[in-house]
Length: 156
Image (spheres, rainbow, N blue to C red):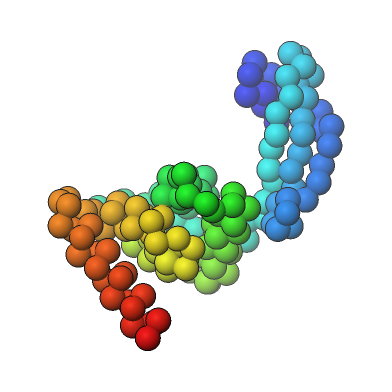
């Protein structure tokens, strides 16, 4: 594993343990050249999944990109990081076990929307604002009103 600090190609594993959800192995490493310590995560990848973008291009599924998107939506909200990790791992697992080698970016967005709906309404609206490309304040108002209507119908 290449050192992120000096670029040296050899590092030594100092400690390994499973993550809380058991979906990955967390490894503490030390660079054999500069001595810096860093953490890596090892995950099972069942299959390569390509993402079909709206413009027609394809790119490999990027778990970290999905994680960043969800973290941005959840920023400054009372949502535990482990819960976000489980959400992303669950979506990744669904994609890898679907049997499909390609998935539309819009399908991934819909999966995230569905998961965030039960998490936190603010995170849900934040993600929707990007996913649905809100351009004006009224777009937020209209979307938020559908959430309020659904909440009132469910609570009656």
